[in-house]
Amino acid sequence: QALERDRDPHPFLDLARQQFRRVQAAYDRGDMALLDDVTTPQMQAEIARDLATRGTHVPTDVVALDAELVEVVREDERYVASVRFHGTLREDGSATPMPFEELWHLVKPVDGSSGWLLAGIQQYA
Image (cartoon, rainbow, N blue to C red; front, side, top):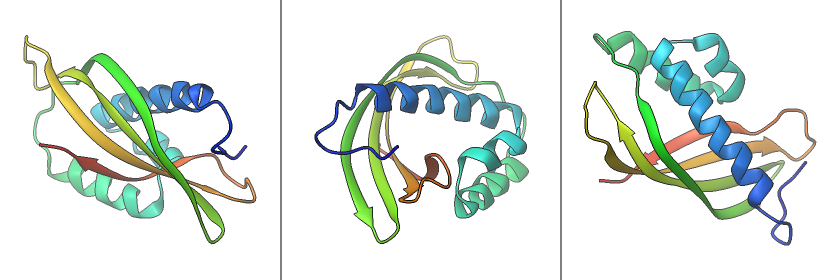
């Protein structure tokens, strides 16, 4: 179902947080089958390149995660939702959680032929 401006964004944001954790876990495992199901073809190619060039990898521990809906727009035959994720992560085996902030762009066809797919990630410094 499309996310409309006048609707309560909380169910969508709950789903977005679940998706964030699933995508992070699949990335950590190198699970391209799952990643292919939840990302656009362009994002799939980018992730595949990242996985092909990474060395040893310690799974990321998502310690705290919050999400904020920045905007939802309709572009031709698809909806684009921008979600700001922020919280703390332990990366590369670090004992200390570090803050992070990312903007995820999710797309969904207007006709509902697929669910929300990850189309891009912007990381903040």
